[in-house]
Length: 123
Image 1 (tube, rainbow, N blue to C red):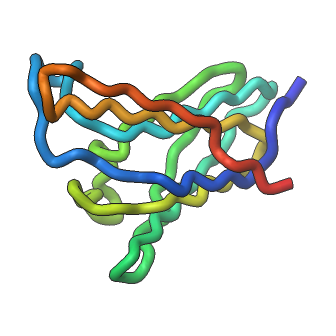
Image 2 (spheres, rainbow, N blue to C red):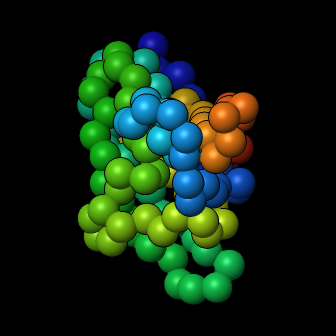
């Protein structure tokens, strides 16, 4: 059974510029979490939108069948590295239905903050 849709939107993207605590586990980051419940691998593309420049991407990922993939935006580098300390939004497209969630770890202070939200599905 394939759950989800093929297009999702994450609007509140931000990679905090500093971190406290041991790396890499406590490095401040934004993550896109993708679940593929289907029987075939999903080819996923991320397009990043900014307030003051043209979009970046697509960043290409493969999510194996019946698996989950957590991709830190911090680690995206092709076609260009993701900027830190910059607001962004992301459109996620897939050739198969998937479910998408966003998580942010903000460890700029010793009192860490963790935020998560489901992406907006486009039917």
